[in-house]
Amino acid sequence: MEISRHWRLAKQRYALVGEVCPNCEHKIFPPRDICPDCGEEAQDLYQFSGRGEVYSYTQVQQAPTGFEEYAPYTVALIKLEEGPMLTAQLTDMGKRPVSIGMPVEMVTRKLRSDGERGMLIYGYKFRPAIAS
Amino acid sequence: MPEDKLLRPNRDVGIIGYGAYIPRYRLPASEVARIWKGENFKGPPGEKAVAGLDEDVITMSIEASRNALARAAIDPTEIRAVWVGSESHPYAVKPTSTVVAEAIGAVPNTLAADWQFACKAGTEAMQAAIGFVGSGMAEVALSVGMDKAQGRPGGALEYTAGAGGAAYLIGTADRSLVTIEASYSFTTDTPDFFRRANEKYPEHGERFTGEPAYFKHVTAAADEIMQSSGLKAEDFAFAVFHQPNAKFPTRVARSLGFIPEQLKPGLLVPMIGNTYAGSALVGLTAILDIARPDERILMVSYGSGAGSDSFIFKTTENLIHRRELAPATLEYISRRTEIDYATYARYRGKLVSK
Image (cartoon, rainbow over the protein chains, first blue to last red):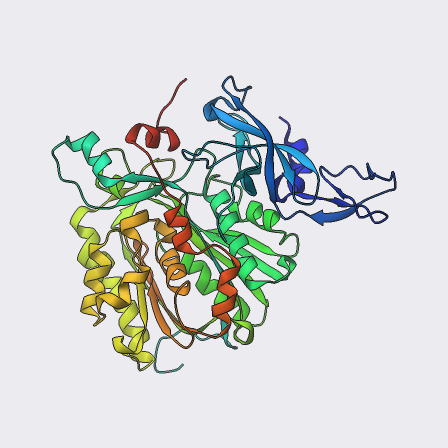
């Protein structure tokens, strides 16, 4: 049971809420309360747009425990338009191949469930950006 | 008591934002027929939308609600109620609406609740939101109708039980994209379709789902609201009804005096199937995507059990530029990946590997 951990991460996982440095305006994700750029204290919440592009990717065939039912799936490094880089699953690829530089957008999806009786865990994934 | 039976809020309200969501996978009805009836069986036409492995009513409601927020252009903390109507809430106990409210940033000063009334749970939430805002208790309330619909493998429902729905932000009329001119609800105890606790698939009453159920309730709800408002079919630009198949809404529309042109823009069932609690509501988003200002729309939902909610909407100038702020319903529909029955069985969790 890791309920408290999932609960603590809900804001950043559901909606890409990170932080912005009040000193140098550096955008921070995941939130870490200290600006990695200038070292100042940074605890102001910042809502990321969710837009970004694929920086690199790999296909997962042998999924770790809890993710078996989703394999094969693609995990990508996503460069957010505000700057930070994060790791996330790609989803809704349909029959499209992944490519570096592909524009993507954040969606909140089911990441996994904690067994048959446990909680459902939701969080960000990225999909090919919809036109408008 | 007024002479008519309409539901009247204390102040005028309307839709200040709307958003659709339809997952990208499509299962043609002919593929269901191939598996259960054989290669040569001519099944019903059309196809249905199927949710991906990582989608459920929570994730689909979040996306539709974000689209509604984008069009409303409001701060999500203004939302004082998050109400999600569905018959496929992921948890039996733990509200879908709490996760949706957290994800869209509406917590903590908000009500949150899940509604159920078969296929009209979403419009039931909309009626409640009209009352909640119309009484002055709140400035903005969110109502969602969304489903990942269940149908027993091989059963009649499996051809059309689809996935998707829509979210509506209800607020005061002065800032609305669409004003709500009237609403009405009609309910009786009619056991045409139900799912017992802990059962995976619903049961339905075959032909009993027609005359005493769908047609009686939809017709009564439409007749009352049109007569009490002094309006006839020709006074509306569009009409949208609950659409379990194409036949039922087409027949009820004709009997109420509507012509196919009024019905067609909101008749999505041939493309996405019956999205249960999302059905009439996602038909309405397709209409709002193309309507012009000052046009009247009639919407009548139907929920088994049974009841209908009817609404008269009127579009405003605000709709025209605001609707560009989120993806149109047809953009979701055209984002299409066809799947076979085996993939469908996997996506719907019908395969068990342990």
